Image (cartoon, rainbow, N blue to C red; front, top):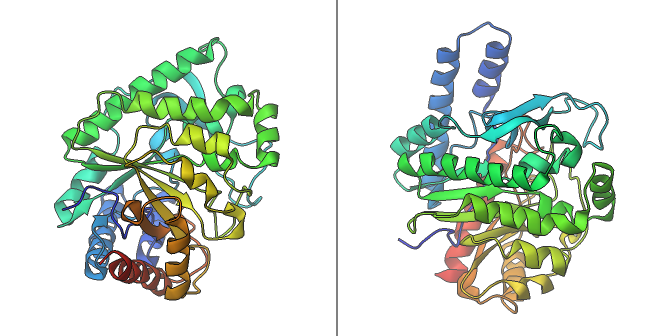
Length: 363
């Protein structure tokens, strides 16, 4: 089988089935025990795996069904990171604003994180199980320098050293559990192409000009010594919460150049709307790397036209060889437990469309 990413791929999260949403609400209210919730999660994940394989996807995720948020459930398990309420911030929506990761102690990884999640996925899937985690830069991005204790880390460089080491440990634990396809989610690169967001970074105590390289270096530190048979990709988008978005603006050359310096096998990039700009920055992609074009939106149920997708792939092939291109949604369908504003049937039709178009384009 080809090395991931695949010509038909997806970002990972899936809409939570009603049964799972109800069970999670009951568990939070103390009405059912953790083991009862896990049994529902197991059952829903097994069904999601079956549907992905039935459609023809080669990379199979657990839909992030055991998480509330794409990033916080992982970050809070690292040593030295706590979740704190957001007092004032630019947010998607005033309703159900998630907490924020804050660094309050020395960052480390003293115990396995989500290896049990992966073990169940590996046992259940007959194709390539893919696991997703927030990139190391995510521990910095939302709160910036102001959310990293100056007492613990008077020198921010020490924080980057520690977060890199913590991620190396977490990734090694997943690898030892059998993971061979890992995706790092890092919205920071796309956010840094938006002038309003760059100003927010300044308010949080950072120079946004320094951050693209800092985030890329953090990924490289996390992947130092990575086993050759572990395929790693990186995904970036402009926000995905209840079908809303956070940032806008085409990819800027200086940001993309830094991002493409991350030593991963492929990049998932959002291209489902005019907010993403043109394909010209793709000319900077290093030779031999794969580029997964997120042309299918997860923000609405309207099904894209096959001819339109093929035309966009053809346009992108002017900058990246066709054999190095892949097709995917621009983001997950449910980056948070709330989910985007489309139905499960519409979700599965979109994933099936991706497989069908990829089969016709790449045979």
